[in-house]
Image 1 (cartoon, rainbow, N blue to C red):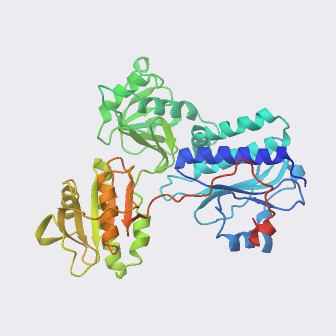
Image 2: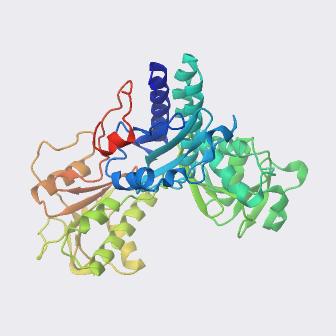
Length: 479
C-alpha cells in the first residue's frame, strides 16, 4: 500500500481532532491507532506519544500469536455503507479501546488513556467510534476541505459522545422506542448549570423519567398539566430547583416539562442531574456518566486522586494494616477539604521519633479512627498550617504546623505559598511526604521536592505524521 499525502493527512487530522477533544474532556490524554486499510494488508501502528509502549507482549499475543483480533469480524465485503462491525477489545491496562470494520477500512482499533478519575468509559468509547467512522470517511473522500473540518468536528464532540453513550445504555433497558430526547436534556442541564438565581448557582437533583414510567414514582406533589414549567425555560427550572436544594427530594421531568417533586427510587433507565453549585454530576440509574462545569461536560468524577499516594506508601516500611489505615484517614480528610472547598496540607511523617515541628502540638496524639475523630482532624486542617500525621501509628500529633525550607530551583511560581512551602520542606526532609489540597480541588502528593502527581509531559505530536510502521516492525522496537 502506498501511503500518499492524502492518507497521511487523513490519519493526522482524525488523530489530532480526537486527541484535542479528549484532552478537553478528560485532561491530558494520548491516543493511538492500529489499523489496516485493505484486506490482506499489514497492520500499522500510529502511536506518536508512546501510549502502547510497554504493552508489546499483549499486542503480540492478540495480533500475531493467536489471531484473536479477527474473532467475530465479518468479511469486509459484507460491511454496508452505514455499518460498523465491532471488534473484540484488546484489554490493555490503563487504556480505553474500541475497534472494528467500517466501509473502506478493513480494520481499526483505537486506544486512549484511561484516567483514574474517569466516571465511565462509555463516552470515551463513543468518541473512539466517531473517530473510527471519520477515518473511514476521510480515506474514502478526496475532499481536502473535509479533512480539515474533521479536526474541529472531533474536537467538539463531548456532548455527542455523552449523548451516544446514554442512548446506547438506555436501549438495553427500554429499547429504541423512547420519548426522552437526550440531546434536549443535555442542553437544558448545561443551560441550568449556567443560570444563577439571586447570585447562587444551582443545587439539587433534577430527574428525567421515561413518560410511560412516571406513575411509578412516589410524588410529594404534582403540578397541573396546564401549569407545568417547560424544561427549556431554564430560568423557571432554576427557580424550581430551590425547592429540592440540600435534600433527598427530586424535581421530576418527562424531558419536556417539570411534572412535580418526588422522593425515593427512580424507575430503570432514568437520568438524574445532581447540581452542586458550579459543577454537577450526571447519572444513568446509579451509574455515573460524566460531570459538568464551566459550561462543558467532563469525564472526571471530581474525587480526589490519591492513587499516587497509595503507590508511594508501598515504598515505606509499613505493614498492610498500617498502610490501609493511614491511607483511609488521609483520604477522608482530603475528601472533606474538597467537599467544603478549603485548602490544607498534611505532613505524613515516617520518622521515629517524629520530626519536631513548629505549630500547635497535642498533649495526647489523636488516633484517627472513627467518624468523630476524622471530622475533628478535617476541621483542624482549616487552620493555617499543616496537619502532622504519624505514618506508623495513624495519629494526629499537631496542627497549624509551619513547613520551613530553603529555596531551590524546583519551585513552581505558578502555584501558591502552601504548595511551594511543601516543595521546600520535602526537599529539606526527603523522607517525608506532604499532601496539598488546593481550594479549587487539585490534590498534589509531594516528596523529595517534587510533585509526584504532576501530569507527565509527553512528546509533542508532529505536525504531519510520518508513514506509520507495520505492527511487526513496531514490535521489534523500530520507530
